[in-house]
Amino acid sequence: MKKLLITTLLLIGSTTAFAKDVSVTLEIPSMNCVTCPITVKKALERVEGVKQAKVTFENKLAVVTFDDAMTSIDSLTEATKNAGFPSVIKP
Image (cartoon, rainbow, N blue to C red; front, side, top):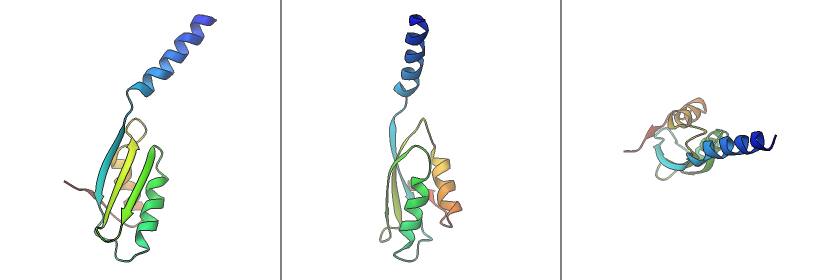
């Protein structure tokens, strides 16, 4: 029983050992009012694995920090698109 518990803990710990927080900047050119960033931020924060989302109207950008083991950039751009604000990765 003790070996099973140790093995389980090692497996759980090993999957999170490879996860890392990643930041990406998304361009969101369709934001056209000062309240748009609120909608975009809420959409991004609903994506599982997102740690932080900073959205600015002035630059029409979103800087998102997320756990790359839980979500992907495609999921983030899909979330903004579904909220009515298509986005692309800023080069």
